[in-house]
Length: 249
Image (cartoon, rainbow, N blue to C red; front, side, top):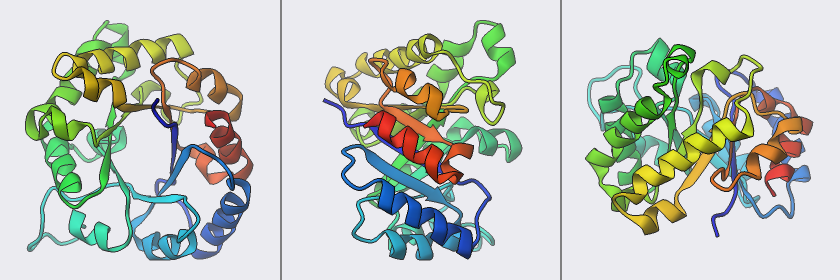
């Protein structure tokens, strides 16, 4: 049986004082949970968060990684650097990276490969825009994004990947896909991987992201192919994030 996972994406938020208070609340409120919990934090705070969470069972994640391994790439952060700071998960291909910074499917696939090379788990973000959904292209778009990674790392390595389905039209908008809409896409992703390897597909962790709230989490996470969530704004509010984690539990 697949273990539930909840990952909080802080995006470009936080400061030393706020982080300490938020983490204190999570540490005290998450004791005894069986689901996996991850916080994906901005690069400058990785040392603070890694130290604070040491021994708590809460995992540390990064929000991005370079497609390059090392060299004269000012401003980039490599997978090997992240690994040195106790990073366990790395978000790859988030829609904000794809749309605002022009990351292509090919770049996302290379980033996944780099993360895996250094023993971390990529959280591969996929999802369609509102225009693509209204045009009936949801399955086509998501399948293309998944296949770009499968073709580079192979299906056996894909078992180490976490997939996060985040419909772009639901990210930060307050609009959430219905449990049925989310389940349909999650099932399609699992079926796509099953064509190459049924065992890998059965064990694949697929998260839903897109304005998940405490009120909607339990029904979403109760769907057969939804294994947890990638949480944005609610991850910055202790009580909300705790409620979502308990819903997954």
